[in-house]
Image 1 (cartoon, helix red, strand yellow):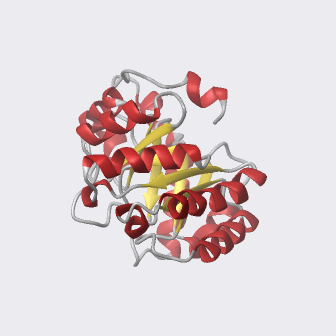
Image 2: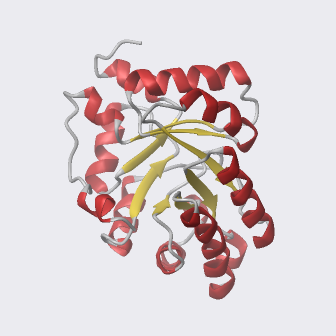
Image 3: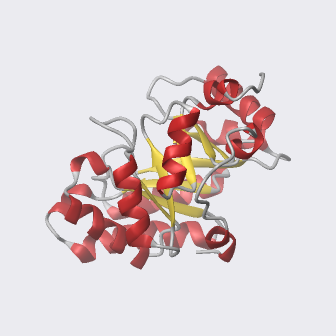
Length: 238
């Protein structure tokens, strides 16, 4: 993990400055029905507010890459989404294709079944395979744990395996399951990874106060489809 990431782990966020809040946000549209005009709007909003990253489904990466070219906004997409049950070779191929299309960050879903079965090497090697592809292209990898499906012990193990495999971040949720990010899960994940990785809170983070709570708990990235509403809540205009 880069020293820059380690150096920017915040304990609080200044809600009076929406430009500061924007830098924490992955502006995301990864629902199955998203179409091209929505991707165009997503990218325009990200440039306007200065979000950290735009996140889209793999099918929209080429479009988003062309729209964000020449800006400071990073482009992310998903691997093994949303179940994490793909073969490792499939995840590798997906990651490689996304690198070629212009993705700079990958949010991959951990192999949840293998994690629950305590197949540690399978889980770690699955993550490492994607991390190697991404890192060779200068990209970051965030590992989605889907915390609502895990016990505390499984969350701890998932964080340890992700760090051992070279992940840059651990992430709470896909946002498509029974529950999303919680303050307790973010705090637990930060406690496990320390400064070895970032923590991304995603799923159900829809207000400025929720962003602040997640950052206080240890998150240094927020994934949300409510980013524009959060900016407007803080006084920014579109």
